[in-house]
Image 1 (tube, rainbow, N blue to C red):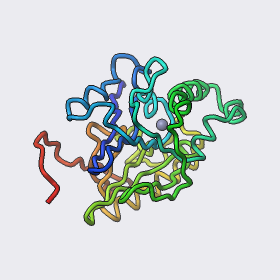
Image 2: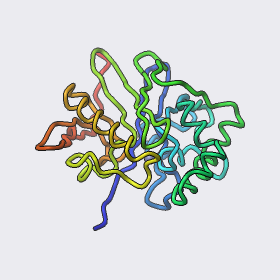
Image 3: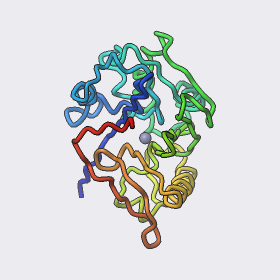
Length: 243
Ligand SMILES: [Zn+2]
């Protein structure tokens, strides 16, 4: 059975910074994808307005949209990612050890990051790390070695951008042990997923998930032996939440 998945990115406008979390696949997956710049423009943001990009990890469906034809799509942005993550994808030894189905990920990830490296626009951190007021990076290894959650806090509310702990919500919420070939360390990825789901359900934290149906915002609740997804109602109404 074919399953459609979303590739969501998240924009946070703090007033001081326009922070994009992940950049989608760009042209890597063909015509299905790559509409992030157009969607940002529709929301009132030119690519040049983005000054910070936080990467959950370097897989092509999160980093591919950074670069088009070898050029930076976001020319004024500095990319932040875990030092472990960057070191892994740039390591020839790690590439040599990786299984055959992961080789292309190294090629794509390096190509996506290259023009930002050349421009001196990559910063790394050791998670946990406070990056900006109200924004912290948390280590969530397994899917990739430096896979990162981003915790956003504002006026007592908390949201967690969970990266790739969920690829197929219909399956992995009910059976969190289910791993995916893309995982660098499947056992560790499953442990990280189970711990995160338990914590998110217990704390009723708002979740932002790259691969749950657009826009990927909702809550995790316990359901039977697993969990269920409760999307927040999608609305096109622009509300002023500044008060
Ligand atoms: Zn991934």
